[in-house]
Image (cartoon, rainbow, N blue to C red; front, side, top):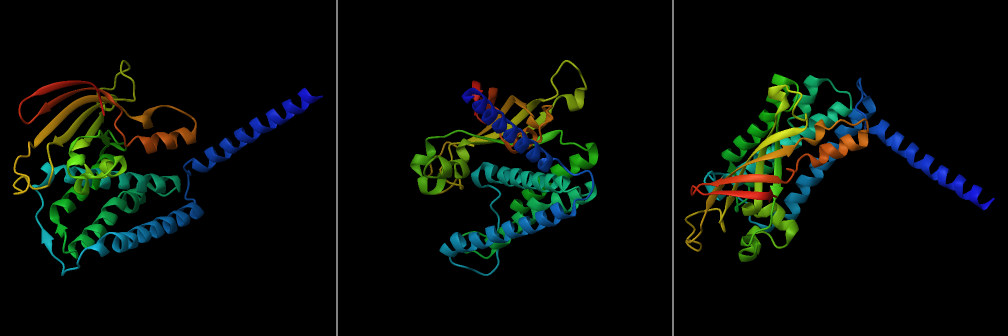
Length: 301
């Protein structure tokens, strides 16, 4: 009878896992009509997270620097505009998350764009205002322009095509520059991932079949155009302490995969695909830099 007991335990365990997955799938499935409880819970959660994040930034980041009267700055020429691409990317992705969350709640498409896709623009504007009252930084109009472009890219595509044919993505590889200025470019992988502009690449990933409408190309295959930079130890090319910087712009052409276009009936997989779709899938890549040099990367991160 021992084998029977083990079989019963095994099948009860499998049934429990299947039931849990089924419940999770049902929970993650977007509502066809307005789900008031989901919408209200979502609004409370987003408002709480945004408030907590802004308070944390004020206490843990801005408190270390002197306050000032509100001022603006022109930082449009810093970091070979890599920081601006970061603003476009962040605004787009936060807007995408906001719109998808409201879609999950069954909110109308119009309200998804008005109240969801503008999430990134609203949050980043608040951060920019906080910069304006800091002696160390200042309110940047070019940052605001970048934030607006990111939000506009999401909303514009949804209005024009009812889908995202162009997706903004991110990739990163470690460089030697962070070790030279760990205070500015990051100390360790986690900080470098966010702060070392030399290792960052921002991608505009375009879905091929959205334009060609052919059966010969997989629906999930994209063509990706990337921008990066190299040789930067400081934002200012004329910094007297770092006059020998070999600053170079880099342009990339590669393939990519739009994970959200992979067909599956599992809401769990759809959610995971949506989360990881912010990362550019490594592929062979052609690089052309501002010095006129071309290079083939067998696999580029």
